Each structure stands twice: as structure tokens, then as C-alpha cells.
Length: 297
Image (cartoon, rainbow, N blue to C red; front, side):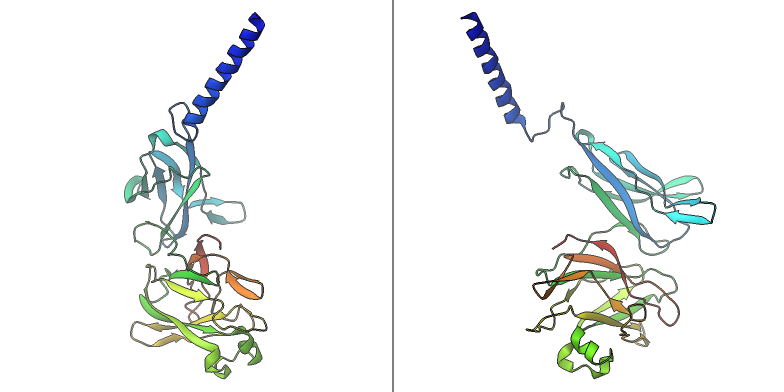
């Protein structure tokens, strides 16, 4: 009889413990003391000599970015990611970036960044988009509303590029372009269309532009539309005309990631930030590269 009572006591104790655990599951208590892995990453630094240190919630994420070292074959520059495990119980949400100059730490940027709800880890993307300008946190533009499209913001930061430009974006049916040997002038007007005009200043993000890969519908099958651009300086002088070519290295083309599903092209990402890089005096705005990608469709 005593053995049965003892077993019953253990069962009741177990149920009580289980009930207590269920009541607190998912809530923060001091005993749980959850931590969030946080990293800082510079996507772009316009000033080649600039060095930065980054803190979040009072924890140093990096003491010097970008890192430079000599591997025996030459000087190598790279942005290193260092993970800090920040206690959720002591989070202040304050991101602080210091510019390192003459052995001094000068505050370059402060911002509130809430990562307390991110349990799988968080990387804070930052950039210095123009030399001598302050660092800023990068956020991808508001996403497009349809999976055939992606929303894009552009920027350029090379001092060899003009202070201000106007850029026109042209969408072209890929099949028509191929049939016309990549001669844009010979493509019928119904198979090409200007889909965006942006005014852009060096070191600043452009307004949001939506690129639709299904711009030209073809019932027998569909290749993603191609996107080209021409560039005018602030005085209205043409710096760079549309440049289409069968070779990607010879073209000046905007190429966000895309794929085809059920014969319909769709964007890989809902949004992105893209950078126009400087190649030479004949192509001051080379094909832009994706600097920061948003969520996948």
C-alpha cells in the first residue's frame, strides 16, 4: 500500500512540474537568460582608408573593419564577421559605429536596432555609400507584390563617377532581342518599354523601381525580360547609351536573380539593393551588382 502511495505521489509531482513548465514555456525568465547571436557586416565602404569599430548593446562586435593583412603574396582586404552573443536580459538595442582616426574612436553613427525577437541570429548590414559620408544601416526596399517582379534600389559611390545622373531603364523581350541579333533599334516597339526613370546622386540610394520579368507575355513559353539602362549627366548629356550584347561581359545590363517556373519567369528575391560600379571612361556605369538581397519568393 505504501508503495502505491509513493508511486502516486511521484506521478502527481511529475504532473505539477509539467504544468508549471507549460505555463512558462515561450516566456523569458531570468533562469532562461536567452541570448541572440548578433553580427555586424559592412556591405560597402566608399573610403578605402576608413576603419570602423562596431558595438551593439554595449558589446563590441568588431574592433576594426575592414581588416587588412598580408598573406605573403600581397595585401588582402576583407570584411570579417564576428559574432557576439548578446544577453536578451540586458539588451539596449543601441548600435554604435565608431570611425577610427589617429588612435581615437569618433562616433560616426548611432541607431536603435531591435533584434530581441530574432532567435536564430541577426546580421546588421551597414555601408558607407560615399567617401567622408557617415555610415548608415542598409534596408532593402519594400517588396514587390508579385513573384514575377522584384523591387530594386540603386546607388553608386565611385569618385570617378559624376556627382549626379539620370538613368532610364528599358525592358526588352528576350526572344525578340535574340531574333534581332541584339540590335535594340530593330526590336518592335511592342516588345520593348521604358519601365523606370531615376535621378541619382553619388552616395545616395535611388527611389524604388519594380522590374517585372514577365513584362512581355508569350503563350508558347517565356524567357525573362532583359533590362538595360542609359545614363545622362546632370546637364542632360548622354554619358552611356543602352548597350545590349549576346555576351554578358559586353552588355550593360541590370540582372537581378530570376528563374522560370511553369514556363513563367519569376524573381528569386522580393527586393534588392544594387550598385553601379565604375569600369573605365567608356563605361562609367558597369552592370550593377546585388549588394543586399531581400526575402526569397
